[in-house]
Amino acid sequence: MEPEHGYIAFIINPKSGASSSKWLVNEFKDYLSNRNFAVQVTFTKSLDHARELANEAAVAYDCALVVAAGGDGTIREIVHGLEGSDKPLIIVPCGTENLLASELGFDEKAETLIKAFEGKCLRSLDLGSANGRIFTSIAGFGFDGDIVKRVSNLRSGHINHLDYFWPIWRTFWEHKFPVLKVKIDGEDIFEGHAMAFVGNISRYAIGLQILRDADFGDGLLDVCIYKCKSHLHLAKHSALTAIKHHANRSDVIYKQGKTIEISSTSGPVNTQIDGDPGPALPMKIHVIPQAVRVLVPPDAKPAGIRARLMRILG
Ligand SMILES: [Mg+2]
Image (cartoon, rainbow, N blue to C red; front, side, top):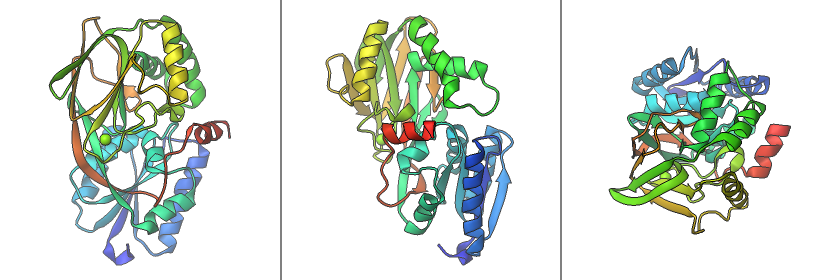
């Protein structure tokens, strides 16, 4: 891309991220300005505002690229605002988990952003729609819905990994696994006590490869259902997932599809989409194939568990 192709819409959530990510944002912005690109910086005031700013960039004839700097929630809204446009997007990871950015091969280094910018490696990104709400990465039902609810009740502003510790601990001991009923592309797949995940990216929190075969541009959503009723069984599922031996076991169902319907007979079930509290059940999810185009670092692979733990600790 050359400066004469148009301006770069640089959308920043000023609230997300630690000071290191502000430094990353500035470094990438300076790189673009030093190469004579016209960079138009805007700051988001809310998630809705992030989507509006992306929407404006999507229809601006002289905008050549959108840069989105924020956490998973901000990125989701910006992607939503760009849906269906051909404007390429680059993601600057500034949140706690950065699930989508990590899946696309970004880390917290400016040189990786520059490689993506210069590399011209453009990929299509599918989205999911859950009862009309857009998500980019992963939706969870039951166990992690409870965790997200607890975290969001405690939350005020930017959160770090430690903020998840007590919610996970308490949910582990107190969670009652609901009966979930799952239909994929019209076919009844499962009914029973479980926790379930539906998504588009292979790695979840701290790099766990729950949806290990997920491809963000294949037009399909991956579904993983863990049959589960007790703490002990959950501990076993967690350990087997950490060593990537969960998906072909008899107490796990792993499938792909375009529409997924999840309901429950157990009363209200907490859900999460992209780490925020999700809609109530019953939920109907469908894939929106090739919704946006993203510039990714050439040959990049999603960071593994070890790399992500080092980032958390480092
Ligand atoms: Mg997919």
